[in-house]
Length: 89
Image (cartoon, rainbow, N blue to C red; front, side):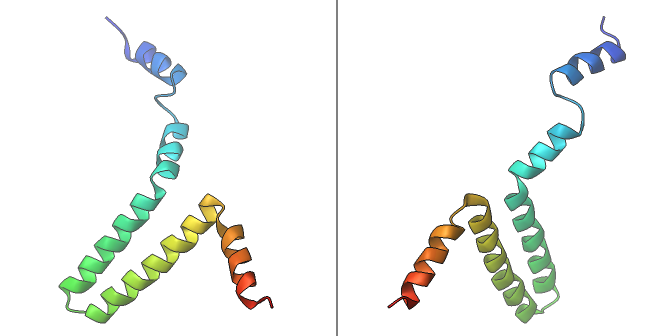
């Protein structure tokens, strides 16, 4: 029969316990968490009949997720070069 201390020691050495697992999970699922929070806020505002707030939240969410995607994928340099190319003669 395994004791609690032995089970904890085995799991801790395998990376099961500790804050590294939680922080890695948050980093891997940050977009999903943000979108779920925005959706919950938009649904709450829609429930109260404040449709303009829902539209504002949705538009800000799209802009925010777009900026976050550009920052995390490294595509910001390509988008910047494309924008400069629009104004270059």
